Image (cartoon, rainbow, N blue to C red; front, top):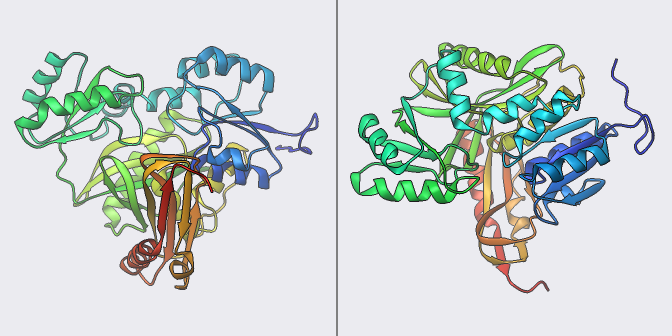
Length: 398
């Protein structure tokens, strides 16, 4: 039986959120709807989830000793990784000592390392994937590219949000892809994965929820990425029943292997009726922000229900919807939005401003949401609304 007492009392529940970006902010809001105290961690002050959490701690979560100290001091009921840059060996050790890591420390460890997740998916589970090779040195990399052939995709073994990722189409791009992978890895220079380019019709995120009552699926989400980073998404992605059934089978196998309760963002390539596994995240997915307007329980609400051990008897889908990332360009700590009056004048539109404290170069700072008669209408609404938003970045806060 699940019991949640009054916050800040002996029978209250506490969650330690490891990562406080825009996805963590929505998770925090959902946790607090159930009366759960939230302590938000991130490497910088003023991160989005810190605005709504009960308390905030600034720390590098790659520092395993510091992470352990915080866990032992806070004594959380739930440790919730919301980013990939975490000292996962420490999480694994903490879980063995009895701490509750969501969905599991093993899932966090495996999915943050492309070598581990590919071995699980392709070797242990036999799931269809693109051809791939790993390389630890530049010469091994050049040999792998030669064997895989062009075009190919090069990624650091450990990275997030598309950092260090390149699509290599010509021989002249091979060296640059190596350099970008070395600069974009989570821990600096390191191993890379070389993947054969998949000639897919489209790619999807299949949000898959493991909960006390079993496994449930959201409607498939189509998305467009640029340099490996999400730009827009829509739901549902039209696909055949055969492909959808196969997608759910692949998602079920990989999430069952990872275990635990929570939501998983399973990324898949679709070619006709064939389904090819790409990656999986054991947490809410950025493309899934569309569920803030498309479902009665968003991906964040589903994640929290699942990790609390509460039932999810249904996932009610309202209808076609789309999301469009709002990107800021420039350098500064003063980020001012305007144009909302026009953007939100169209029925069926909504938006979120993340409240990020700084932009250096370019950064995703908000999202536009829209419902529509169909996917095309929803996408057009989201694009038109996003075009009305002006974002000014400056050095001086007024």
